[in-house]
Length: 89
Ligand code: SF4
Ligand code: SF4
Image 1 (tube, rainbow, N blue to C red):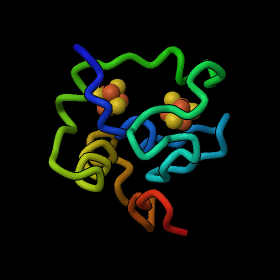
Image 2 (image 1 turned 90 degrees about the horizontal axis):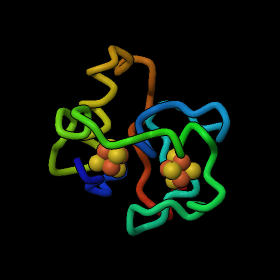
Image 3 (image 1 turned 45 degrees about the vertical axis):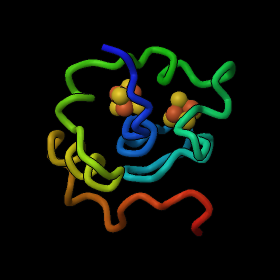
C-alpha cells in the first residue's frame, strides 16, 4: 500500500537511534508529515514500509492513531503523555 503520510510511524514507536521515546513526535517530522532529514534518515527508518499496520491504526487524529498503535503492541500504559503537536513544548 502507499504511505498515507499519517505521521503515526514517526510518532508512536520508540526509536533509540533518534533518542525518541514511545508516543513522542520525531523532531525531524515536519508539519506536512514529511521527514525533514529524508536523505539522511537512519537505517531503521529507511527499512520501514507501509503495510497492514497502517490500515489497522487508522483514525481521524494522530492522537487516536498513536493510541491504536500502542494498544496493538500492548504498550499503551508505558507512556504518560500523548504526542505533542508541532511547536508545542
Ligand atoms: S504509519 Fe504507514 S501510512 Fe502512516 S506515515 Fe507510517 S508508513 Fe505511512
Ligand atoms: S527520522 Fe524521519 S522517517 Fe525517521 S522517524 Fe523521524 S521523521 Fe520519521
